[in-house]
Image (spheres, helix red, strand yellow):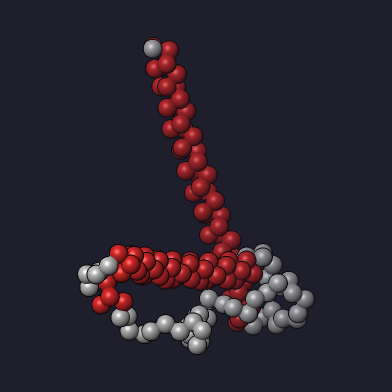
Amino acid sequence: METLLTSAHRLPPFIPSVLTWTPTCKQKHQLLDRDPESEMECTYQDALHHNMTAECIFVSSASMFCERLSSQLAAQEEKQKNAQKKQGKLVGDGLPRLLTSDKFHNHVVEHKKAIVDEEVVREEQHKQRDEQMEVMAAWKESETAWLEQN
């Protein structure tokens, strides 16, 4: 299932309805600054303080979730875009192309460069793996020698 939502889209602003209306200026701070006159007021202040803390936690966690979700969406789009580029075929969609055009020639050059770059990266990874295996072999020999001594 393909979604119409992309990472370029931003979440719509929250517009409270009559049922979910909250005051825009917080007057709760004034209530928390006063000393409670009874045990009931103390209980109400504790509940109000707890509610304000929970609201702050909810807002921060919701914003963290939205940031993570948008970064995952951007990464998914980037992966899909790169997957389309890395198919390995220059002409694979069955559409006719002018093989002598500058656009297609540039595409061929980029494709060859990408193949060479991938090969260089692969060779570098093989070299690093071989070096790591040599270091691990030397370490294992010293480890077995140390174990034999003890």
